[in-house]
Amino acid sequence: MTYALVLNSGSSSIKFQVIDPHADAEADPKASGLVEQIGEPQGQITLKTGGEKFTLNTEIPDHSAGLSLAFELMEEHQVGPKDLDISAVGHRVVHGGMLFSHPEVITDEIIDMIRDLIPLAPLHNPANLDGIEVARRILPDVPHVAVFDTGFFHSMPPAAALYAINAEVALNNGVRRYGFHGTSHEYVSQQVPALLGLPAQAVNQITLHLGNGASCAAIRGGEAVDTSMGMTPLSGLVMGTRSGDIDPGIVFHLARNAGMSIDELDTLLNKQSGVKGLSGVNDFRELRKMIEAENQDAWLAYNVYIHQLRRYIGSYMIALGRVNAITFTAGVGENDRYVRADALAGLEPYGIKIDPERNAAPNTGAREISTDDSAVKVFVVPTNEELAIAQYAVELANRG
Ligand code: AMP
Image (tube, rainbow, N blue to C red; front, top):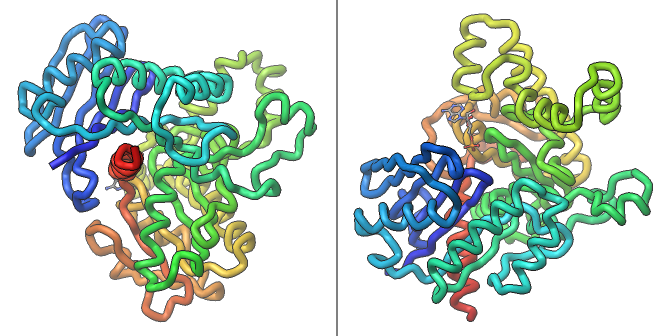
């Protein structure tokens, strides 16, 4: 049996999974874990394998030490690179800019190109590169593959991708809509034609990735034609802690009148806004409890979230003209039946009818939640970005 190692490196953390790329989408990975608090006095590594969880607390000075320690912990439990046949390493890379539309086998040249994109993702791409460099050093004989979060949206038409700001300024600074969560939107949308019994080319669909981060996409015949995230993952839907779309004039207003710095505004809009900014919590399970306890802030936050979601669904229905399917995915989309019901409530005149019983059924894989006579089918399809990255990595590695 061969496996892929999937790495998602952040500035102070590394998420890892060891996955059989041919496994069922619902199967647990062979191993998964998290290296946290890299660079802080006390770091932590957790490993889950065979239904058990193991933890190691120690100082982790940098990514190199973090990954080495993670491999040691994996080897202690016989799931490390020395115990298993790891045939490829897949790396999640946040920003592929205009340079990458598809996953790529990593070479020195590809690393330079990812480095060139740092101005577009100053926090994410350097951390992704750290992970790539360390993993290539530790596993030099295995192909490494970069999978870009923006890749799926590379083909968006200019009308959807361009912002109406000065063309020269935009061009010189890479200002355009790139979109994110591409691996998830692609993975989920690829399953929909089979659920509909239609060829992929014939399917127009909307995918709603509603997790702590949230985005939606309009997809025609397998090609993305619009998405809600933009140059950065801050725009579009209301999210757990991110504002989503706001009037850009608010930024000037707060800088001029509240004396907020660029960094303070960045923190405000990315970490202190969204559902959390309005209600104090970002987890929809807590939000639901607060709504049930008649907390007005929670109710308002929920309504703002739903209102914005419906705005996007409506605009993508118009953009696509004909819609075969709307699909919910990610933590909120897969689990929160209230969000699903409210996002599509009252849309019977548009051919969208949710079946309340199907919608309330327990979370069991890919399933239809619309009525048999709903013209637009509504699905819940669990996302699995790591599995998708593992599959790309092995496919490209086998291609040589
Ligand atoms: P993700 O970013 O896809 O991992 O989604 C994480 C979010 O999903 C959490 O912050 C919760 O808001 C939400 N979530 C997870 N499980 C549930 C659940 N059972 N019911 C409602 N929301 C959930």
